[in-house]
Length: 161
Image 1 (cartoon, rainbow, N blue to C red):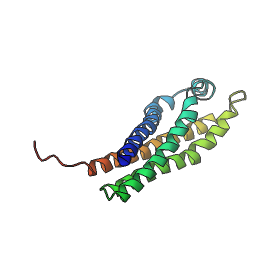
Image 2 (cartoon, rainbow, N blue to C red):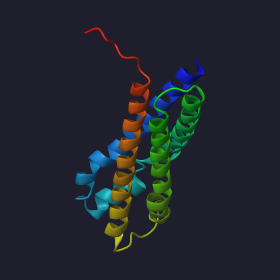
Image 3 (cartoon, rainbow, N blue to C red):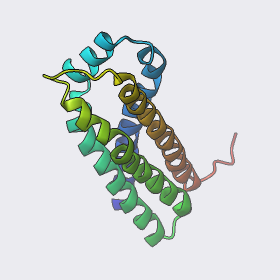
Image 4 (cartoon, one colour):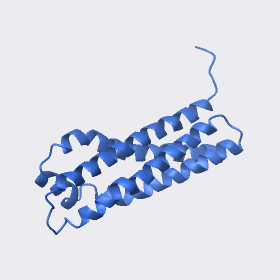
């Protein structure tokens, strides 16, 4: 029962994490064309992504933890798909690491703009923020695919058509 419960939690958390990343990815083309007032107004001052930073951070961390635990349990129960589960855990962990490397430093700078002046090179920060999120979402997509494949690897074949 524990393996099923952890697998369920990992699937749910990974779907939620990838869902947030997919939102960023799908918004990228439009947001890259926004002018300073629209992009800064919505992203920095409007609080559009406020819950991504608080609730989203908790979900991201729980996803990596649950995938690590799932990998351990799949291996301990000698179930197929352990390499795929490990791949999922590593890909989501890389996504979280990339957030710290690519997006967090920009978030620190953006926090200064809430009540301050927006620098003339604001588009540099926009590009790094938007493309950083897009890169992370691709790692999450691959991680989610590996997770689904790990579950399918442990799914009995139905020989009847």
